[in-house]
Structures are given as structure tokens and as C-alpha cells.
Length: 334
Ligand SMILES: NC(=O)c1ccc[n+]([C@@H]2O[C@H](COP(=O)([O-])OP(=O)(O)OC[C@H]3O[C@@H](n4cnc5c(N)ncnc54)[C@H](OP(=O)(O)O)[C@@H]3O)[C@@H](O)[C@H]2O)c1
Ligand SMILES: [Zn+2]
Ligand SMILES: [Zn+2]
Image 1 (tube, rainbow, N blue to C red):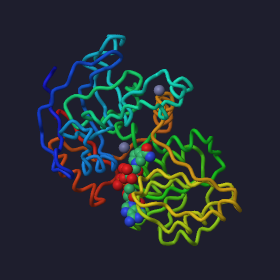
Image 2 (cartoon, rainbow, N blue to C red; image 1 turned 90 degrees about the vertical axis):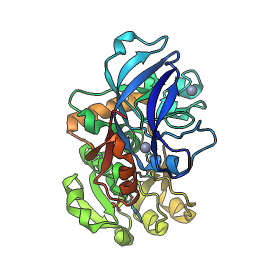
Image 3 (cartoon, helix red, strand yellow; image 1 turned 180 degrees about the vertical axis):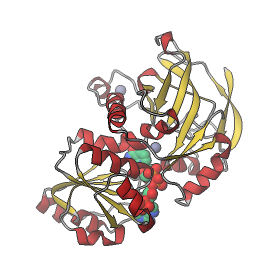
Image 4 (cartoon, rainbow, N blue to C red; image 1 turned 135 degrees about the vertical axis):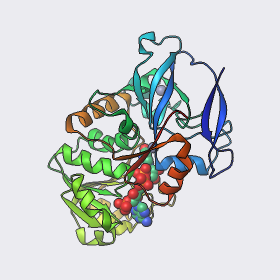
């Protein structure tokens, strides 16, 4: 057991405090990362607000980690020590179930999440299985690469897995942490891109990210039949008739925001338009690797505000108020 430090909370909603944490040495197939940077995702707020009984207290969020490998467990090549790698929402899978064996690891029954039942990346150190600590292309700046490991790969997956055509018209609802990367990605993918926002003041920036068009969310009803794919990164209850109505025939609504209320969708427009509704959780290590190369090739990067880890409570408070363009990254040491 080594004593490390983490920013955690024992009561729902925080505040986070710097606490000593006992961390067992990396087990077979695991590595220990010294955290250099960790992005703050909106999903971290859910983790902080809802301390689960399974979380050995304190709860420690953080799943957009850039870290240096400082120790490895049995079965891991010691040459990894010293390398800088990225870690996202998944820290390990069983490697032998039918989903793992067929390259669909995020469906594994024994998915280990970086922050659930274990301390995550807002810490001096974090552990993960070697498959899920991914090398970072040299062209990417480690200070802004963390958000690629959750926000980025989450919005890459719907384009990549569905084989979205470059002739497609793609709309992104919510241009925040996920959305600002989605706009850049869809543009580099070759698509016609529309950013759909609640904040008119962001319009020029959204065009600067690569959007051909910007639409204010209340005006979505005027875009009937327009989009082959809508990536919804908002977790708010929306005018769902307007959202579905904005899909072109055979279009897909891909829901990424963790909307807490049920989504009431009328069946008839889906039947008549041969529409679909999909969702997904992050992506596989192989897709993550390809995604990072894609980002390096197209100079896609997260726009970040870097704060020292000690200012994590300020970052959380500002994220809750939507006061970030477009992602906070907390810099170690914790
Ligand atoms: N599926 C997954 O694997 C996965 C992974 C990561 C995160 N998530 C979830 O994805 C969601 C977005 O995460 P994030 O980190 O991108 O959050 P974020 O940075 O806070 O961005 C969310 C965006 O939602 C929009 N928004 C704010 N208020 C709104 C309202 N009243 N109505 C409609 N839209 C509104 C805003 O964009 P505008 O200012 O442009 O309107 C905001 O920037 C969260 O629910 C998070 O938990 C899911
Ligand atoms: Zn996340
Ligand atoms: Zn498995």
C-alpha cells in the first residue's frame, strides 16, 4: 500500500477535499499512472453529487487523465514505465467474454469504470488495466489531450461506428465539452455541420470551430427534415417533436447527454421516416487509438482552461454555471 492524495468528497455534492488515499500496488495487467492532467467532464458532477454506497469513501471523480506510468503489475512490459498515456471512462474489462473477444469491450459484463468503486483521476495517482491506457500521438499537447479520452472519443464513436458518410448533414445540440469537439470532428469528417446552441453569444466561436451553420435551440422547429444525424450532447428535456422533426428520412438521433428525465418520443415519425434512436458509452481502445491519430492529422484539440488541481472546487462551481469555454483541465500534482 502506498499513500497517495486525492480530491474527494464523502457527502453528496461536495465540496472536494484533499485527502490521503491508500492505493494497493498495481495488480496483474494493471499500471499505476502519476496524474499530470485530468479534464473535468459534466459526468463528474453526477459522480460528485451522488456518492454511491459502492464507492469506498471518499468518492474521487476524474476520467480524462493524462498520466505517466510509474509502476506496472505482473504481465505488463516494464518498458512502459516513464511513458505518458491517456485514460478515459473505462479502466478495464475482462478480456475473455464474447464482447471483449469481438472487439466490443464497452459491452463487457465486467466493465471496470475509472471512477466507480475506485478512486479516479483527481488524484496524485490512478490505476488502470494496460489495454485502457492509450499512447498519445506526439503532435497532441498533453495539457489539452485529457478531454479527448472522454468528451472526444464519446462524440467520435457515433461517426465512426455508424460509418457516417462525408455527404451527411450533422447537427450537434449543445456546444460544450462534448459538443465543441463534435463540431470539429464532424467538419473534419467532411460533413455539413450545424451547431445548435442555447447561447447566441457563442455563434461566432461555433463557426470558428468549423460549423457551417449555427441554429438557436428554440428555432430548431424551423429546420424540419434537415439532418442525417443529430448528436445530442445536452442533458436537458427538449422539444422532442422538434428534434425528431429536424431529422431527414433515415436520420438518426444519437443521444449522448445523460438526460435524467424520460425522453418521450412519438413512434409514427420514426416509422414513416425510417428513423432511428441510438446511444453509446465511450468506445473501444482500438477506436480511441484511431481517433487520436485522426485528431493529430486534422489538428483537432480541446479548447481548455487549465487550473491547478487545488482549484478544483472553483472549476466544479463554474462548470455547474456553464461558465467554461470549453473544458476545464486540472493540472497535477494533486
Ligand atoms: N454517453 C457518454 O458516454 C457520455 C460521455 C461524457 C459525457 N456524457 C454526458 O454528456 C452531457 C454533456 O457533457 P459535457 O461534459 O459536454 O457538458 P457541458 O460541457 O456542460 O456541455 C453541455 C452543453 O449543454 C448545453 N445546455 C446547457 N443548458 C441547456 C439547456 N437548458 N437546454 C439545452 N442545452 C443546454 C450547453 O451548450 P450551449 O451553450 O451550446 O447551449 C452546454 O455547453 C452530460 O450529460 C454528460 O454527463 C455522456
Ligand atoms: Zn466523461
Ligand atoms: Zn469482457
